[in-house]
Structure formats: structure tokens, C-alpha cells
Image (cartoon, rainbow, N blue to C red; front, side, top):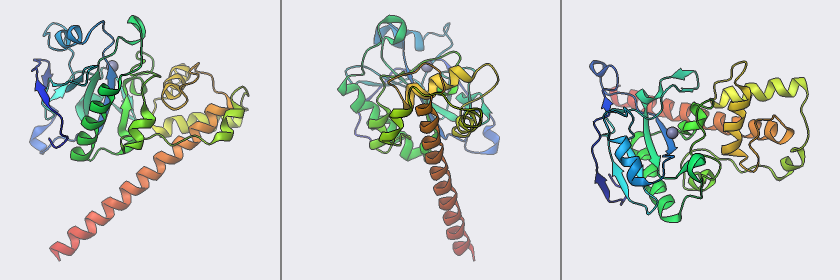
Amino acid sequence: MNSGLDIRERPSPNHDARGDVVAGTPRIDMLVLHYTGMQSGAAALDRLCDPAAKVSAHYVVEEDGAVWRLVPEERRAWHAGVSHWLGESGLNLVSIGVEIVNPGHEWGYRPFPEPQMTSVEALCRDIQARRRIPAHRVVGHSDIAPTRKSDPGELFDWPRLARAGIGLWPPPAPELRSRRGRGVGVVERAAALSDLARIGYQVEPGNEAPALTAFQRRYRPERWDGRLDGETAGRLAEVRQAVEAVQAAEEAAKRDRFRGYQRRVN
Ligand SMILES: [Zn+2]
């Protein structure tokens, strides 16, 4: 660890192997952020370490900025549950889970304090750099389980993390706001839902509204009603373009690494 963070150990028994270890190093290329949704940090830590609860995370960040390691990154923690992203399911297998202490919508949702965000930023930056996690694979729990989850929620400061190089949050074009109240036509609706899927959300008949709500909590947090208004459609196009730019850069970097490899072996 190179983050300058003082990480405390609080081992949880709730973890298992990351799939097929015979095949070599397990793939870890996703970062999932949560809020704990319990009345206190101590209660959350107890639950995440309780064998009967069968839940855990790799890290917990308290409101005062203290960071706990519960599960080694090489092991699979049990934080995401039934989850989908970019056509892949069961994302505990490939992700690192970070629980951020906050009472959540059930117990009095409140802003994440500065010392906590400083630690979240340092921890995520370190994980993302070590694991080479692509920006579009840094997600909230609600992004990958929108029908069940709403964490870390609309108060979480994604723009701040993006400014620090963590995850994806393209600044919205100012003119989009004027389209907030406006509905969209059939063609624009189809394009918007296609953008939603292209970004990574699972879009199926019947779950469009929860998926749109999750998208809005993250990228248009002023209103998350699950309605596809003109502003949301425009925002979807912006984020989809940002995802495509990241993927194109990834492909180019992969090609460069391969050429470097070829030069070394030839
Ligand atoms: Zn969660």
C-alpha cells in the first residue's frame, strides 16, 4: 500500500476464493462503492464480521476517516450480491468492495464528511492504480443492483473522485438543464436506453425506471425520479461517450503493451 493511509486490521471470516485459481492470478478489475446503511460504524463493522450475516467488504471507511481492512483483496468478499454490469453477473468475483459508513436512506441519510472523503479518495486511488481498474468499472452498488439498492446514493461526491482521477463523471453541458422538464420521443427513448446499457446498466423490460434512477443518482443527482426526461437523455449520451473514450484508450494501451512485448521477444 502506497496511499499514505493508516489501515487497521479487522479480519472478517466472510470470504472465499476468487474462482479458478488454477488458471493463475484472478481478474480484479472493478471497484464497488457502498454505504453501510446502519446506525453506527461500530454496528456495521460487527455485522460485516459476523459469520451468521454472511456479508463483508474488503474495506470500511468510517466517518472520521479511519480505514479498516476486513478481507484481503486476493479473496472474494461478499458485498455485491446479485449484480450485473456490462453483461457480466455475480460481480463479487472480480471486484473490490468498499463500505463507506453512513446511516443511509433508512436511518437518516447525510452528507459524507470531509475526513471520510479524503480517506475514500486515497484508498480508491491506491486500489485503482495497483489493480489498473478502468474508470468505467468504478461503480456504486445501486449501479449494479438498481432494483434492490440505492447506495452510496445521491449525496456521494462522484465529481470529486473523478477530479482526483477515480471513476467517471464527465461535467454536464450547461444547456442540458433546459431540457429537464421535457419528455422524449420514441426514437430518443430507444437511443437513451441503448446508451444506458452501453454504459453498463442491465436494461430489461420492467427494470428501466430503477436503472434510470440509479443513473440519475450518480450523474444527475438533483432529481432521481426514474423518468427519462430530455436532460437525462442528454446526460446518458454524454456519459456513454465518456465510457467509449475510456474503452478506446484502454484498447490503444493494450495494443502498445503488446507491441512492446513483441519488440522484446523479437
Ligand atoms: Zn451496498
